[in-house]
Image (cartoon, rainbow, N blue to C red; front, side, top):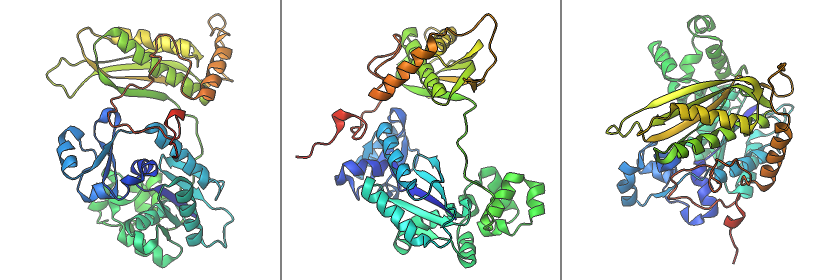
Length: 418
């Protein structure tokens, strides 16, 4: 059996944990730079506040309907997510973290378990230990567990937040209920093709012949169909080494000064280097991009990118940052107001197993230096050591005018009990 555990309105729920006055009130969480709505409480959804709404257009609507607006507090959300996932590992060792607020669980050897009761235990422990409400869907396959979770979320009073598909009758009833466009793994293009074939529900999809699905689509769609039929073909994903690592972000404001641009690119490149070292990889190439604000049509627009090839693989922040800054400077055009930059490291190889060069190799002092920096930054968490061309006060520069405290990740923001 598989389970999908999904945190309800996760970002809004995290804010409510530390501010109980927000319970039962409409809440909206904004994207980077307070741009648009990326998370809503059920109360905000009921008021018809759309997902992705640009806040500058909807701020009047939010004030009129007393919708509380908050900037994204990613350190808090990330920490709360880790706590939830650690709790789930107490119920089974086989856990796939699917996103910041979702996880798949596989139950091997749980043949005689009451999964309704087990799901309730998971919900209650997560709620008691973190304050985050969840829904649990349990079924014989991953795809069906997604369907079961949707039912638990849609009918909280009837299911008490847990729904188990443990019979053929329940499976068919669930598939006839869920629309084809709401099935996990079915995108827009596939929707159109299936609807043209007369598939309106997931059940209709399962009635197609295997031969037709294999001929018309691919092995991926066939596996999805078998999963919906209750035959497990989609397994838990193993943790894989990334083939490329990217750090791309919008700036807090537009920058037209080359020094500001260099500082941002250096910070993004350093972040990529840290991620490389964390997964034990080194890179052969560095891709740097720079773009102006496309929404400001009245201003001169410019977008550019450049790829730097290295003569030897490296994971050194010093090398990656310096090369990325040079690439950014070559892209930079005077008079343009830039809004976004990105750094991507590519051509990844294992740091402990790659072809050495005869004459051109990395400075051997960089490896122990990077280890020391990583250890110190891990110990003091708030990135105490940076390169000299980085902003020593702020790593990520974003407009966050409605930011709440980082209750669990910053000692200065811990709540005082009076």
